Image (cartoon, rainbow, N blue to C red):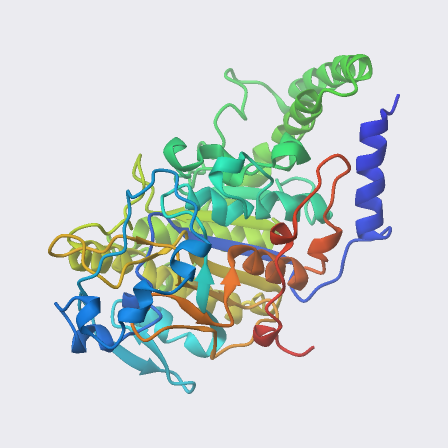
Length: 461
């Protein structure tokens, strides 16, 4: 029995795919998310004016209009009014910058290895969002403010809209510690009304136990386990027929069967020792500082190579807002965190290129918002949703280009402004999906949900 709801959902998906898997420049996505809010001014958007007027109030500088700009309130939607105010006393840059690559794009001294790859990267310096608290972590993934509830994430839309590349692996995988419940929790890699089968599957970079509860708790031969699964599958089919509208039941059935197939495939992917010493060194696995994230990104590359569509990688989760949340000691914390991720990320880009995977693998480096040009306390920066940086590489994206700009002190995105769903739309476009066709009956999407592909950073075919 097929319900009206199920029929309409299948009809919508069929219309989206037109009977076939969409064809785009990219086949897969590796989505890197730095939890807490990376300072755009100390990473990919240098602002020498901050040094020139360091310690001075904005009202005493030529940039006082930043506090009068209507964008200061126009797009802001506070969860707690007045909690994160604009900081008026300018704080100098805490690191230097250098022009990198043939393109000469300036990149922070904290990211020299990523800087060495800048000719393969498109930096978007004009991203903005509406939440000035860490619900922006979920907002970056769903496009909706946390006060509006839960919505499908970018990874779940990719899962929903594309066919499988490998039936033995989940198509949407989560690596690293996910976002804390304070800031969205599992909803930041969930699927909401698309159904739980389209949500992210969290895996550990551990060949012995990559997915808890995926293996039988007692020793069992494969054939015996197969018979057990077949019996359970038959019972599940009977139950599913009795409760056809239970999306959770359908998802559990699918996940149970996938778990059986994953028992061999996933541990093999997590067996990083199979990689050469040279490759492991490329990711920084030979050094204590870079080893944890390096192993995570090497696992991400192995998953991408094996057919996983969307790999969502978190860095900096700490049981709260995130380690990149630089309210104090920004120089110390940001330099340490950058030291953990810079080499592994550059290693990932270089490894994808040497394996012929770069052209059809889209890598995204993102965070929920930037940091204030003004000082918080004596040595920190507060939350800043008005303008910040994201970059993309591979998958048909132009390299060595900068899109958009913030003003001279990094306060407002002022040139070619992009709400976070423009990043989503660009990813989907490169995968061959028209974001505006992603509509499920009974769940009307608003214009902001769709975003617009950033065509200026997309390479010609």
